[in-house]
Image 1: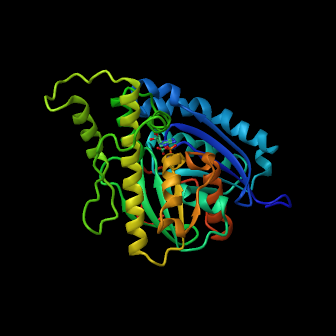
Image 2: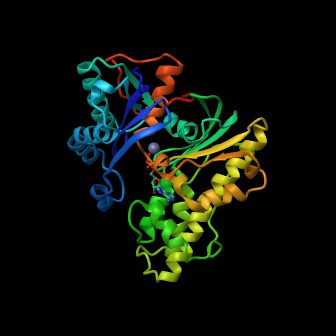
Image 3: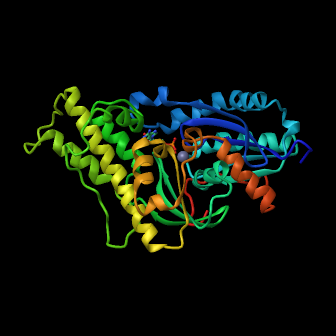
Length: 347
Ligand code: KG4
Ligand code: ZN
């Protein structure tokens, strides 16, 4: 650590973003560089693991160089390197992990392995460090949808998770049925602006009476059956702009409504909760933010909606949690750190 503060390089390659950022003292984001692979994956309407790994390999050195340059630093100015080690696609994780290990070894820097989902949760404390605890956090993306209870910064316990599709996945698959581009979330949000949210009734799966788990897989089936009609013909109908907007708005509302209802249930079950945060790509959704802010029970909590750039995958949240692990908790890993596909219940 030098007089300019504790500068941590955060590296993220768990899915389809190659990202690197420099964060000083856990909150001061000096750079946050992201290369999105959307253009490579959109023709497949989803992330293709091998394509993702190869792209990460081409982009990882330029993105780290860009993050250091934008921060006006060299590796010698860093105090540590933090990197996503889990969960994610193994091939993709290994690219970021190998780069981080090379930097740590070459420049004798401490290496900190980070759980990607924990970093989404931690983004709230980067944008609002004084967030009152306990915090209820919703992480909703293309790969994850889970609720976390945070009683202590840096320690999140999962209290609910999806039993099938993630919320973002439901939007991505629904968008494909409606002939909208990938990724579906932003496309649905744009299209829904001109639609009627109540045009089509789609299911909100609540599971058991007390369950805090999510289920979104029935939504795409309901949408598919709605589109094909009772005859179950194989062809999907041509939609005009009006019908497409109504369906997009109804789908967006069904996903948002399911998320809001589960958050309400969580607040009832954990009345000690004092704040709410959202993270992950779906947290960029404006209808979700609006519904949460206007909800009588949830709206009474201190709400943290991190800036858009901290919601979807990024390196700054990795560096931010890395700072907490390294400086506040005194933890770091060694070069045996390995990539893992799955996350844990407590992160
Ligand atoms: O966190 P993220 O960038 O990557 C994953 O870890 O998956 O999340 C990507 C997901 C995609 O499913 C995408 O459709 C969704 O987040 N998404 C949105 C919005 N922007 C991205 N969903 C709803 N509204 C948005 N504005
Ligand atoms: Zn993510």
